[in-house]
Image (cartoon, rainbow, N blue to C red):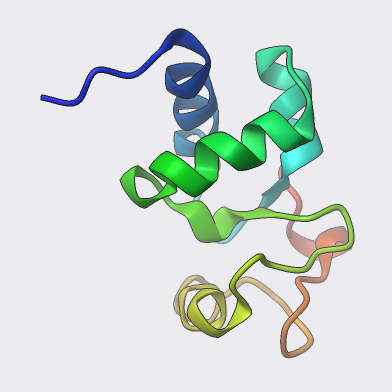
Length: 93
C-alpha cells in the first residue's frame, strides 16, 4: 500500500471531493489544504493518477495536459472551449 505524506493526502482528499462535471483550480485546492498552488501542482504531478486529476486546472482554466483532459471533460460534460475550461460554468464553489 502506498504511504502518502500529510500534504499529499490532504491534496488528494480535496480533489476527491470535486464532483464529476466540476473543476477546481490549483489555487483553490491550495487554499483548502493550507499551502501554495505550486506545491499542489507538485503533489498532482506525482500522485494525480490516484484521483480525478483532470478536475484540477490552472487559474485560467487550462489543463497541464489538454490532450488527455478533453476526453474526460467531454465524458463529464465539463464545458470547455477546446483546451480551456469555462470556469464560470463549472468551477466548484
